[in-house]
Amino acid sequence: ESLANLTIYDNSSLIDSFNGSLPEEVFRLQNDSSFSLLSSRPLIYPSATEKKRRYLLELHRLYNDVMRNYEKNLSPAFSRIDDPNHPPPMIVNLVVESVNLLDLNENEQILNLVMDTVMTWEDQRLSWNADSYSGIGEMYIRRKELWLPDVSPYECQMIDELRPEEARVVQVNNNGKAEYRITLILGCVCKLQLDDYPFDSQMCKSQFFVYQHNSRVLRVKGRMDMNTTHIEGNDVWDMMNVNTTEGNITYNSPLFGVIQLNVAEFTIEITRNYLFYIVFIIMPTSLLSIISLLAMFHEEIDEFNMLGKISIGIGVLTAMTLILTIVADSVPRKKQIPVLATFIIANIFLSAIATFFVILNPSRKLVKLLKRLCKIDVKSTNILHTDQFPINSPQRRLSDKCLRVLIWILECNLILLVIFECASIGLLAYIAEAWSNPY
Image (cartoon, rainbow, N blue to C red; front, side, top):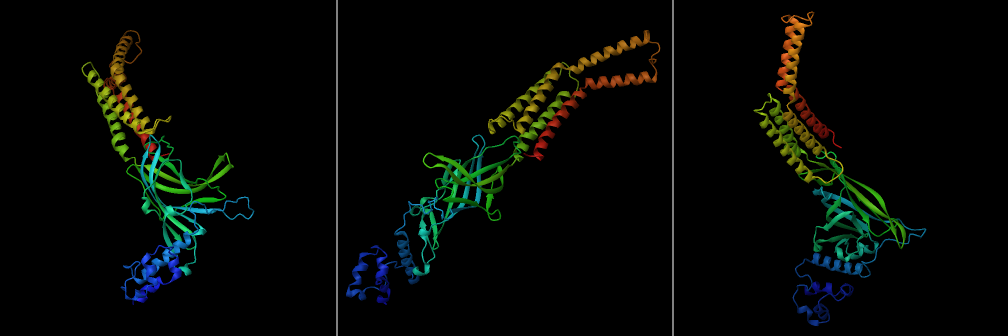
């Protein structure tokens, strides 16, 4: 039994493959006639089963054979592009498995997200005949030991790989294909269109390009399947869709001239959750405007209540200005004024005009003018115009009644109330249209 356990070490070709990595005792015991008296436990991987031990020894031999002439600092891509028999460019597939939105910094216009990707490529230097190594068809090697394609995110403020260096492993198959899973934290530049804020949708791009290789030497292709890809937004934004396209970036190299670099582009469509803005900004602003206008024009304005109505108008102006300041701090300083800011500014102007009408009180002056004209008309009818309707005639009574109703309407400011309330409701309809027809 001792001989059976030690015969695995008597294989000279197997021992040579370790390049001296076996313990010195193994080599000494090979020529020791007393080795049969030793314990039956093997000296290498003693806790493993026989099958697992043979697998580990074969895997060790395979790794040494593959990596013996492998140089990780050299690219396997065929770079002789002037060769008429130039093979197709090396293809690097970048498959997105999940996209999670962290946040969108609107002032800096930076989209922060976590992206799980799988990068696959083919390196013939890592291929082997599986039958020569007990059928081993794949092995896992740390990333720092291998050459990786120079595929990098483009136009990103921040790039970080989430997993630690110790957990970064590449799966290599016997046909030379390598697969590397990457979890990236990206801060991508996203140019925002905020005309319809807060009912806006944004199209942000996450681009990956081949940093140094010419597009005729190495190309990157982005792929994703919306049926299997997991996309998730946050409390502020809903992630609606992610599309992928392929393109090129032209680079003028001082050494090699004009070079086209290949780009894989992922377009991320996000929509803002506007319920917060409706509940906490739009509805309070509308109610404040409607109720304050009703309080200012629901009765006749006189010297006793004028000061109170002016105070209401000034208080509403202060509150709306504060709301506008909050909105202005939450959006970037751009030429276009967002829908929400336009709505608040219009309500501020409406309240300011209403307060101005309270101070001037034009209805009272108009009522006095109508009463004075009425007296003049009665006198002129009695003295000069004998052919007019008699004072007690039905036509005259109807005319006087209509005049009294008009005076009452003017005294109660019903016309101003209707005008201002319609304007306030019209602003609410304006924001509702922007809600139903986003950009």
